[in-house]
Amino acid sequence: MPTLALSVGLWVWAGAAQEAGDPRYEIPYDKLSEKHRKKVRRVMEDVTVAVPLDSPSVASRREFYDFLLEELPFTAEVCREMGRSKYEVYRDPRVPLGEKERAAWRHTCYMEDKDGLSIKVELVLAEPNRRIFYTWGSYDLSPLPAVWGRSVIVTAWEEKDGKLLTGAKVFAQVDSAVYRALSDVFQGWVRDAVKEKSALFVRAARWVAEAAAEDPKRLYEQVKGAKGVDEEALEEFRRRFVGK
Image (cartoon, rainbow, N blue to C red):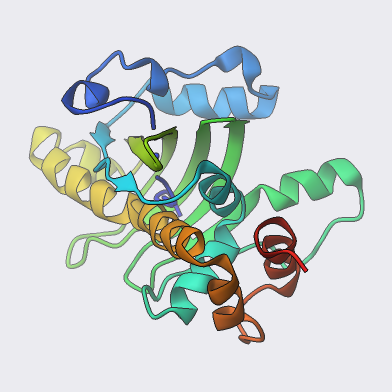
């Protein structure tokens, strides 16, 4: 699932926000676990394409956005229930017992978009206004062979004048030998696929964050009892944003 891309948001940022050297997209390796440091370095030291995503303002508050990026399966479930998307995000159904293992389980999920995307997504860093994800998986570029690879997705946001200023950048590394051999010819295809697929969970977070900010109780009531929506995450949403 290299795209999940899932991801995804940011600081004061207009055109200059997407430029190379933007501090929002710098990787703080010293803050990553040893396992994630190795994975992220592997991508960043051999990037096939680096793709900035669109940076819309989001009519919401950062506590909503923060929660929805933390609970990507819940966000996708709400989007499906609202008729806004068909893709699926889910955690391994086998929940580990150990506290450390359970934390890793909670921050790992799988994404399928029903249109050729299948990736595993790991949250490698959570900061107040930023998230960094690592993904591994495949894209279907039919009629060409599937693309296998990894990506690092950096998302950030800042609350200003009642809105969130958001942005994200995807650093993708293609493994498939046939595509790497195509060099520059293939880069445009990869860039377009990464941009389209990686925006999925960013758009999802935006849709749900705006609906939640407009009327959290109505959103809660709309999806309460829905078969596909995780009851535990929904209850946490109610506790944080709706109240008793």
